[in-house]
Length: 284
Image (tube, rainbow, N blue to C red; front, side, top):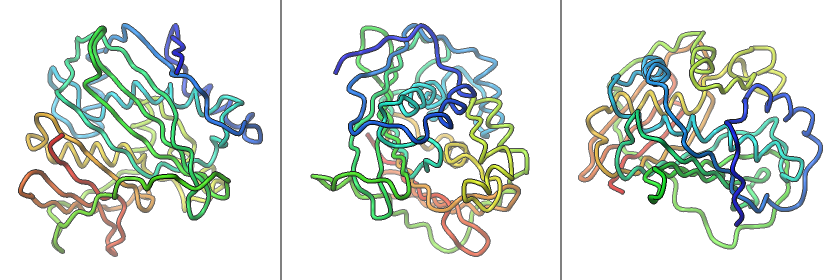
């Protein structure tokens, strides 16, 4: 797969505007190229702001979910290309699997690569995986992510192989934390991540896309759960999360956790017991 090296990270606000213009276009196959950014430097203040919004401790290491912020603009650049077979508006993030061999330091010069694969049918439409890798120059990537996105009503061929089983956490029936999710969390997370998707920052836009109102970013929910498990996710780990139902903002969310023999299970649920997020942490 050829590699296209970009001069700078794409601007997400512009890409969301582009997504609306290309909503009805698209090819029949995924782009046959990898997008790459090299010598990516991290602003310590930006990491601190992200940590405060998501609940992580501020330190010299990147939170395990932070590299997603570096890769997501490249994902959007691919998904808003005219050749991309699925329309970006209305895409729903179904699942995110992160494998990290070791934490990345704030001062590391990083290489970020993204490509698309596994365009397959879904019972209610089609889905696609955006695969991201982050690491140091001249070394194998130490951070790997697979984000699965879904488009209702879209068409794709049936998968030749089944996807890995989704996480199935066993957490009991008593919550270990109750969160008051503030009404501005969408705007606050958008400010630190650049992800200004209207469904997270504007109630009318969210309803236009079929949501009950503004909803929290899925990756904020995942980050917030991992921040609550701080100190329990060290070393080489795989964190698998599925996003079940939208987390409306403002609202209350209930965190359930349980230790396993080799990791942790967690679930984020509504007051009525509806799953918002299911997550497992296992050795890589």
